[in-house]
Length: 376
Image: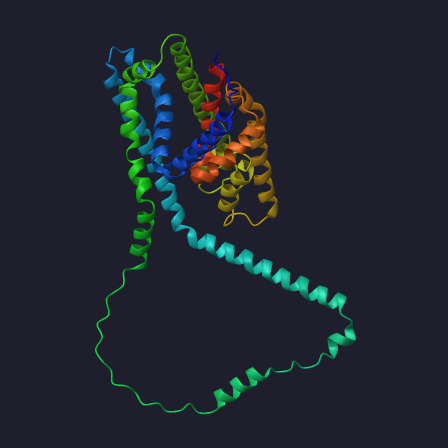
């Protein structure tokens, strides 16, 4: 007769340990492979975003490869003209930097003068007048007195050593050194960024093949779940990126019209910059205020104009955030504010500033996956 021995539940702690190790390995992979992964994520987002345009061009009886090439070329051309306009504005701005520098120095000198007046008035208010009029002369420290005596004594005459010819290697100019250090620090980023257009083109042109290969890894009901997951991630990414772009464009147009009406310098640059900076989570309003306030420095002397600029920019930002954002973006991307905050902290810690921009699309994509998998 066989005796059944009880089985001790040793597999559960082992499974928990493996889970912890897997999570740690995943976080390490996200951190050390961040340049590669960021490039892939950005390429995938652009591919999802441009897919409807490819479908529209294919209706002209063009193959997918040709349609993908046309869409990518038009996108690169639009980026080129946008960069050209940005370069023209920045070049014009650099010519006016002396005016901005003088204005900043004037503000700093005025603030320092007001601080000195405040300090003097506070001293006169708090310190009695009899102590103000009969202040003892400051006692000179011994070290300062000895230094003064050394200055009065003639310096000793030292023998002059023989001058030897030394060939000094000329140092590079500061501009060349600065450009070299900057390019060296951003070499990996620039290298990976150059692959984004090619990755987007190949993802668009081979979209059907990639989709079939992805679905072939599943069978039966799991294939339907994988299909819904693919479509859900694509829809979420497209809705978030396109919705934010449309919202930023609307805020930029409204801001540019207002800046043009008050004759703010460089309003074609300041308007879009303020509009798209306002989309940053939590800190969008302070960031949106910085460009117009800086642009107004050499023009307006009245503090009331700065109040008008700040108030109008804040009103545009709040209206867009509370009225337009829920209809354009929030209707398709439902995320818990606590989860959004944790995601911003997590991806910002791992990937820096670009992680803050990609935190919400990645979290929304994870939510789409969980929505289509019953176990999650």
